[in-house]
Image (cartoon, rainbow, N blue to C red; front, side, top):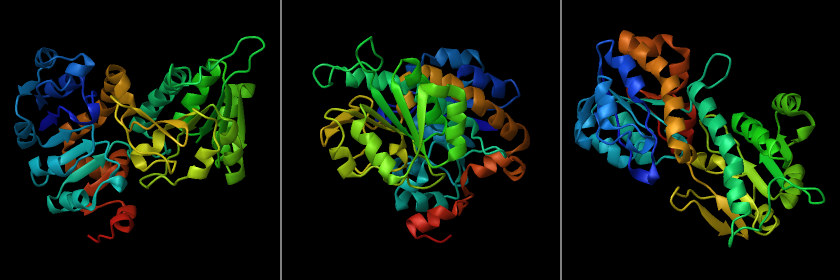
Length: 364
């Protein structure tokens, strides 16, 4: 079987799906791994590194599509990449299809593409093997981002996340007690910030409370609580996810207006539409803007900022499933693997996520 590792160039994307060691796990079993030249450069993996592990280097963007049975892609499929795809191909990507265009959705069905969203892959116990590791990494980045812009001159307010005797620490409000929220809460608390975590899931709040104890305050997330906590927050981390659906705007523009001047809002939900009415996607090269007096950080591919660590972590998890596909074939594995079936957006062009029909008004 032929696997293709794409070189992403949009949105300052620096991650790669499979490292040279990941490629070796396939090539040593007799399968072919094509790597688009430069795919791993930004993460410190040269073309020669891939060659040394048995992969083959391809120098044409069109050729990598044309020679691969299974495409490994970080960024979502767009109309441009659809033009390169062959009918019946299988693709792994972080797709977030609910915020894609109707043209992309229709193109996937017309070309009978089997699309596996890595963010949707899910174990029987509800855990998500790839999303969880990405979320854990993203959560750990939150204090780095927040501290940079909260104290940054000339934009920031000159506030430290932690404290010294006689000076109160920064107030951090985290909306969402999932993996991102939990990881962020742990990281902020470790720096001495005053951390509040809000969610409607009491069990998730209990997990955080049991793990971090009195380092954090957990609050049930009704509208009144959200409004109140945002009003005194120095940092707000929006980490809300509804599986396969557009994120609801739990933060209204009016709430943002009532936040502290030059507070920092990090919206991890922006790749699913954003948790705030004031959120819009930004780039790593130009990650922030000020809206209603609040600094917004809304980078969809946020872990591309730690691209080497992220690429290794992703490759470690993804290799298991790629080896299964290589040995048994796409059809057999998708029939038997609960994890990959849960990750399916489309199967040979057929919609596997009912929410997409409601989203696009398209029946297949």
